[in-house]
Every structure is written in C-alpha cells, then in structure tokens.
Image 1: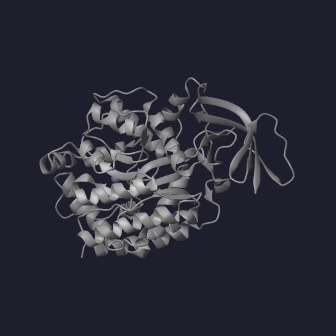
Image 2 (image 1 turned 90 degrees about the vertical axis):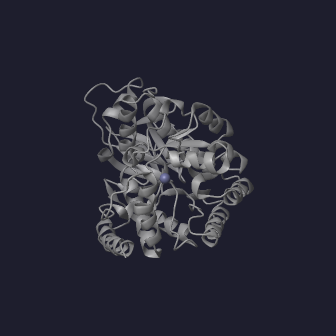
Image 3 (image 1 turned 60 degrees about the horizontal axis):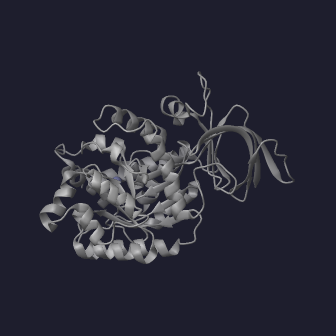
Length: 432
Ligand SMILES: [Zn+2]
C-alpha cells in the first residue's frame, strides 16, 4: 500500500527543523516530501492536520530477555554491589529462559516499544540454557509486531567453553543468515571484557572483522570491569579490547561509566559507538557516565528498561544537570538521533530524517503545544513537553504498525494474558 500523508508538521532533529509538508510513501521509502503533493492512483490519502511527525526512534542498547522480569520476586538477600546484582538477579533470570519465555519476552517488549514510538531495537540477548536458535526466537517476536532489530548473543565464559562456542556460533549464524534482510541484522555479541578470556575475546573480534559487523559489548559499566583488565591482564580495558579486535568500526560499547576522556576519544576515532543508559546506571548505582566526554559517535539505550526513549531522554537530561559532567542542552536529543545513524550503518538505508529517499519509519504525535514551537526551541518542547502517551500512529517500512494507539494486526490483550502465565512459570523456575 502506498500513502500520501497530507498537512503534517514534520520534525527533524538533524538538521533541526519543523516544516509543514506532505509526504508520499512508496514501497517503504519516502518518495517525496513537499507542499501541495497530489494523490496518484492507488494512494491512500491520510490527513494529518494538527499532528506532528517525528522520525521513528531507536533504542541503541537493550535486553528484551528481561521484559518478563517486571514485578518478579526480589532475591532473598539484597545484592550489595553490581556483581551481586548480576549473580542474584540477571544471571538467574537468563538461565531460566526457554523457547517460550524468550519468544514472549521479545513479543511483549516489541509491542511496548512500538507503542512508545520506537521502531528499531538494538538487542543484546542471553539465554545460556537455550543458545542455539535463540536469536530467531527474538526475531520472530519482533517480526510479529513489524519492528526492525539489530541482534546478537551475549557470548561469555561464565558457563564454560562449550556454551561459549555455542554463543559464537549463534552470532555467526544470525549475521550470515540476515546479511540482506531489510528488517534484521546481526552483530557479534560479547557479555563484557571481565567475563571473557583473551581467547574468547579474540574469537569474537575475528568474527566482527570477518563480517565487518562490529561487536556489541558492555564496557566499563562498573569498576569491576576496569579492574579486571588492570589486575588480570595488566592493561587498560580499551587497550585490551583494541588488542583483541573489539575496538572497531560499527562496534557498540554500552555504558562507559568508568572511562576517561582519552579512552572516549579512542573509541570515537575507531568508528565504534558509545551508548549511554542513564536509567540503568542509576538503578544499578554503578556511578555516573561522564556525558560531556562522549563523542559524536554516541547513542542512547535503555539497557533492559522498556523502550520509552522519551522517558530515557528525560532521565538522562535531568541526571546530567545535577552532575559534574554538564553537557550541552542538545546532547541527549543528539544521542537519541544518533541511534538512527547507527541503524543506518547496518541497514544501508537512511533513518532519522524524514526526507526523500529515506526509510518510511515514522511516529505521528498528538501534541498541542501551549507555547510557540519553533525550530529554535524544538528541543525544549521535546524534553519538557512531548512524551510517549502522545504517540498516535507508528509506521515502520511503510506499514502502519500502530493506528489510533492500537496495534494493527495483533490482539494485545490476549498476548499480555498469555505472557503473564509464561512470566509466572519463569519466576518459579528461577527460584527452584
Ligand atoms: Zn546491557
């Protein structure tokens, strides 16, 4: 189906502008954008008078596998630090995941993401007792909703070498099978430097090099990761990642809470991406990521929190204001917009700017500004006015996935009812 969207107020963040124009969409691409476009035979005409259109949002680091953790029982003894949070919460959850719970985690997470106006998820998956084929389960859940994704498996040594090898295989399989997929791509996933020996990191680096798809890995989220490189390998964490092939073009480094200014510059120079996850960093009390040192190659992620990028941006902005690392007012919206540039590197199609030739991934917002909204103060309205409850319609690849706040093809109520049963089973299995 081709569409002519009439009288929309189009918002772009890069370059920052607002214009009233019509958009013609053909085969998932913005074919024309301008004033006074006339419908052609077969076009469905949609009047968007009074509404704003934004480019579809990208969540640049998340873990769909944690979707069903919401409200789960807390560990008997509260974790005292980051390593205990992993051991007592997340590693217990990922070990309990099976085929059904992986699929429902992805399906539910994708449904929520679309309702928040997020059209692409960059996911980092772990399910140590169901590794082979796990990325296809995530893909199936997201595909059912109609989202785009860049997926990987979190390879680690913590389950032994056999499971490590399964992780390597799963990444390689997914990358090769989806090389020409318009909705999915693979990258090479590693958990974190501190759970990977030199041999494992080198093998991941070799795959990332062979397929030119970068490595997706947690970096310096907690001091434990930085100290591991110093104490066990007598080097700094970025040297270690560079020596073993992880620091490269398209690599996605999540967090960077404990990196210094020089290390950020090296990551930028290598063409790798840094992803800031403010809500997660606060929740895990790992410290504050020095946002003013992040370079131009930086994006915004939720690290397992729901993919509400409006919320993540607000938390990120406010936490920065009270920090000693004050960044520009535009920094957080820039990070959010950069997620679309990151996705463009993988998909080879331009996301993030609603202009001729670019992907038809867009969000229609019901926003009635109570004060003048101009190109100059757009970011003020974005950070202090707009929110995800205003998301009205969502289009991905030229298809209306959300229409009038309703999923176009899925029965959300039935899926959530089933997900509750799957979640209850998963929690029971975790506590065995
Ligand atoms: Zn993460």
